[in-house]
Image (cartoon, rainbow, N blue to C red; front, side, top):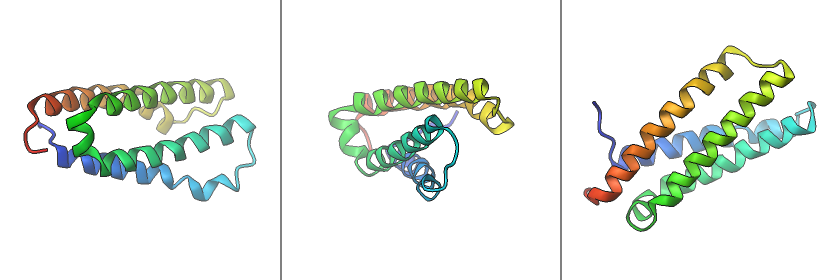
Length: 124
């Protein structure tokens, strides 16, 4: 099984954050419900937060890994709420369903590795 390290976590958070920030180009053209616009804005906010975590990962792993862990839990809760919104609105597509299924697995995997790395305090 692959063991993550601080650098791989750094790149994960930066890449995922950039994907979240890509939603900025869509924020002005959303003509859907207000809730959809709010959800898009939340993705953008998470994008900024994930890029910040990626940049500060070494410091956060040493001093306050709980910030990273809590952010991941909040992101997971948001993904579930967004998935439920898509179900209610009848807009659930295959990509949403795959994301809904993979997000908890990835989140648990990341949290496990963040806890391990912060305890080891090696190569940070």
